[in-house]
Amino acid sequence: MRRQQILEGVALVAQRHLGWKAELRPDMHLVEDLELDSLRLLTLAVEVENHFRICLDEADEAAIETVEDLVRVIEEKIAG
Image 1 (cartoon, rainbow, N blue to C red):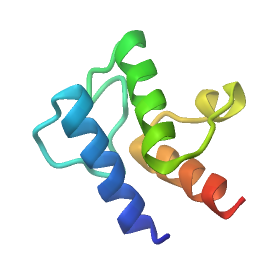
Image 2: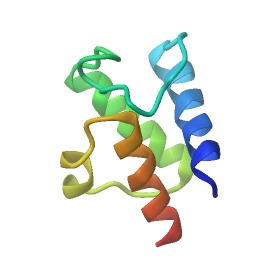
Image 3: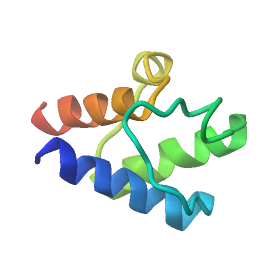
Image 4: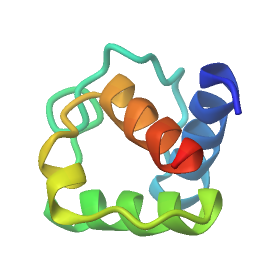
């Protein structure tokens, strides 16, 4: 799966489950730019796992600060 397809999947998850309506760019920070609190971060993680059929562990989640980080982790899990 290409990075652009993963980014589009993450954007779809953000739209459906977080109500995100703007463009989702790789350089955006999840907390600062998307304004995700702990509950919304958990929602994003769970729905990303469901959408891509992957499992994120604590180390993965700790390494994710930006949309690009999330895309990279998803890409690694899919390639797995």
